[in-house]
Amino acid sequence: MAKSRDTMFFCKECGYESAKWLGQCPGCKEWNSFVEEPVGNKKSPTGISINRGTNKPVGLADISLQDEERISTGIDELDRVLGGGIVEGGLVLVGGDPGIGKSTLLLQMCRNIVNKIKKKVLYISGEESLKQVKLRAQRIGDIDSTFLLLCETNLDNIKEIVSEVKPDVIVIDSIQTMVCDNVTSSAGSVSQVRESTNILMQMAKGYGISVFIVGHVTKEGVVAGPRVLEHMVDTVLYFEGDRHASYRILRGVKNRFGSTNEIGVFEMQNDGLREVENPSEYMLKGRPVDASGTVTSCSVEGTRPILLEIQSLLCKTNFGIPRRTTVGTDYNRVNLILAVLEKKAGLKLYEYDVYTNIAGGLRITEPALDLGIAVSIISGYRDEIIGSDVVAFGEIGLSGEVRAVSMAMQRVQEAAKLGFKKCIIPFASMEEIKKVKDIEVVGVNNIQDVIREIKTL
Ligand code: TYD
Ligand code: MG
Image (cartoon, rainbow, N blue to C red; front, top):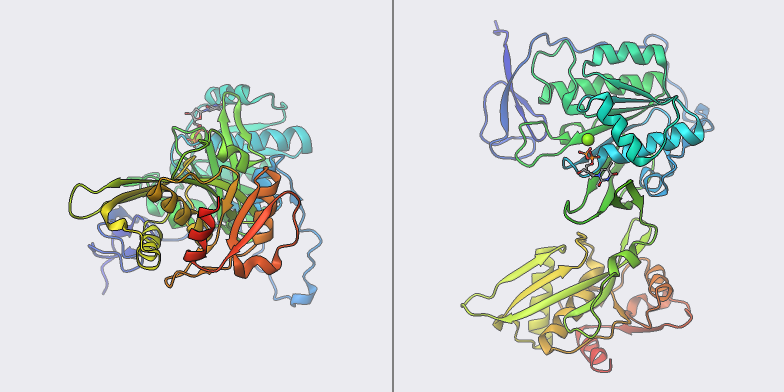
């Protein structure tokens, strides 16, 4: 007969469960990620089984979509990432490093919902005292007195309170502090986090409450990474950015109610987060004029073109093997572009250490930046200045061809809007370009065309 177990091993990264300790997780292939946790009563929580017994299969045609109404958060950037606002009964996970501004963003959202839309919002904090939350609330501005605040970490208590209060929106800050009675392991462990999310999911779906869950991501976490819950929730947003820079980017990585890959850009200020309406302008601030090795390129995030500055610095190699360092771009893509430039354009890049950087601290892996990276490297190599009114974008293939990219017209329009005078784009994208005022658009077929074009600048 199988022996009943007191403890099980869980993968910290993906939640894989095993009776034995394993060096590598069979689920996510992460090494050394197993932790032992007690598994008391294995009965899963019953939660709020409002619909139990009344659920029947329905035809697709009979499902009405009319009541899928979205609540605006009053923060355009957040609405955009959510796919147009908060969905009733939606479960949203907001992940990010500690101190990045998750609590601030959600508190600002609560303020807007309470003040403007007059919905009932319950903010449950397991990390900060009521006073601390109030202090923060004062920093970001007045909140109506109907805003409800609760300091509680026990989900069974929370469940009762929620069934009494019936709020429209709940914020749980953070999931790592929540515990439920029928799981014996400590708060923040994989099994606690998973069960807690389960209960919150039942609350959200059962009562039609929109639930926001804050989750900390730690690199070598003792705390369970929220990746365990990514598959349970409807929407996953990541709040990222350099803690030393003031801007923050909210990125949608999963969204059952809208498109992913949308981003929202914010700036942290003394009175909370401010939306950055024009990220291009923001990213190009402080750009050097008349410097070699720098060029402006255009990336599309979701539906939004963002102009950014790509910088390359080339220094003579002192040792045998040249060094390549990339910040903000994909390391392998830069290597690939270097190889293409070497082979197809005859640049002796093996003599140089190459450093590339996307100014402003953005991280972008879109292939459309290839041409910008190539141009900045050529400019750095030849020490030739590319005009500060030039934008270059396009994907580079291994035979040196410049390939079409999506949304070329929007990119050109964004460049024109910010006063750029010339766009170097893939020739294959030229047909979708209509005449835009005050900007010259040049199509290039391959890397040789690019070099010829740069000479005329
Ligand atoms: P916080 O929302 O507490 O981060 P998280 O919940 O993700 O851990 O915000 C953390 C930082 O933001 C903190 O270091 C202080 C700073 N901050 C401001 O600069 N201005 C503000 O108005 C507020 C509320 C916070
Ligand atoms: Mg916080």
